[in-house]
Amino acid sequence: MNSVSYSSMIPENPDDVVVYFVYGTLCLGQCREKCWPLTPLSVHPAWVEGTLFGREDYPALRPGNQRVGGECWFFAKRDAERVTTVLDEIEVTNQPGHPNLYDRVELRANLIVSSDLTSSADLKPQNTADPPTSWTASAYHYATDPLLDGFNRLTEQETVFGKFSVWPAEKWRSTSVL
Image 1 (cartoon, rainbow, N blue to C red):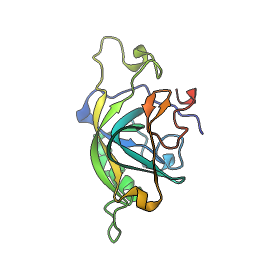
Image 2 (image 1 turned 90 degrees about the vertical axis):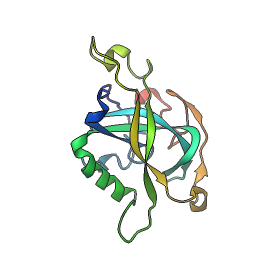
Image 3 (image 1 turned 45 degrees about the horizontal axis):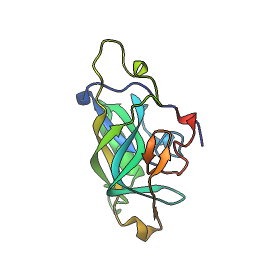
């Protein structure tokens, strides 16, 4: 697994940014990390509620009540259309002549902000308010039953950031992500 480095900068104003929650091949250190069309303002570990399924090649997220670990990628609001268009192509969403492989949804993403990641002094400049730790984010749910496509349901496991369902299984296992 490649070494992962998260930005400690958390945007302060939700009106200035768009957020995408990813949990698989688009994450830092994974095979599609380089597919993002623009450099993000920030990337931060996060989790959403759902049910995570996995196979060797990629994961699938569906509604549920597990804590699913992933990343929030923050972009300037002016870049939303470009980023969404590229992600929709990658996830086979709203592509003419093709059934959706994934459906784009909005979820509540919760940033992982802890002393394990960075000290609180590194997260914000002195004399400023704490940035939001919960964001509305675009994400992608698998469009059909993942079990019918050879996925297995993944269970929560202990990671350096807490207990989460993650793909691949070794994600967040070592301190190289810090």
